[in-house]
Length: 358
Ligand code: F6P
Image (cartoon, rainbow, N blue to C red):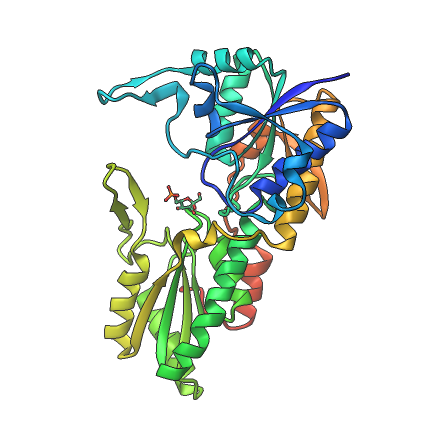
């Protein structure tokens, strides 16, 4: 049966989003379905007429698969249930979004997002008028029920490469190099990149640290005859006294940042080491997706279409034991996936003598 489906990307971008869109478009076209790309997440549905365009396989001739970002655009602010208006108030615009979907005549939407986006999309779908299927993406890898979300592998690869580049300059100048990475409240990027990139110290929000144990580890490294040390720290790690570090932006929004500089000062004064800080930032989100991100993105796209084909709505595709499966969207949102104390990688790091700060 022919169908008309929509697809949108929502929340912060990452590498691999275009690979998901390409996969959906090609498979849907093989089934004789039409696919409409909704622009700028749910924001595209607020315009009249809605901002959306038909996506065809010709557009995805093999080039876009390789590109970072999202050809549809995305948005990580402006919850339609409490949309910020110009006068400073908020307004519930959910009816307008549903009207936009009706105008496009879409029976299903594939939402590519993280926990925040899925909470909103699910709330909209529960109001009726369209069927929702989710594809997980987030460099933070904090969505539950899936071992990997699109974008995570690329972010870790970029952070690992940063350590590869910091190591020779650290060694040349006898320095302690601190790399601050993204990840919000989950330390997956720091932990994975730290292990892969040969870090001496990895600090993640899930494991409290002391400055003494960091200084001790640096002293041990020096005693062993090595003249440099590499530290990876996750952006949500707090000051030793528990104070969170955030930066206020011109739009009044606060974002994580500053722990690298904080540690740099402390470590320099405690150990006497010359210390430098690199904040990797959005470099982790852009650029070409890795093989793994392209692979899971493509498999996710196919499974998302299969879910619509089978009428299995309200589900999110997921990666478990090297297979694509699907789970209830609410289960994925409810199970926050941070680094657990018994995580294989925590054991791996400790076994190698990598200091986790505790
Ligand atoms: O959730 C993805 C993420 O990249 C986080 O790791 C980071 O804290 C945040 O988004 C940055 O948001 P923005 O793009 O709004 O600066």
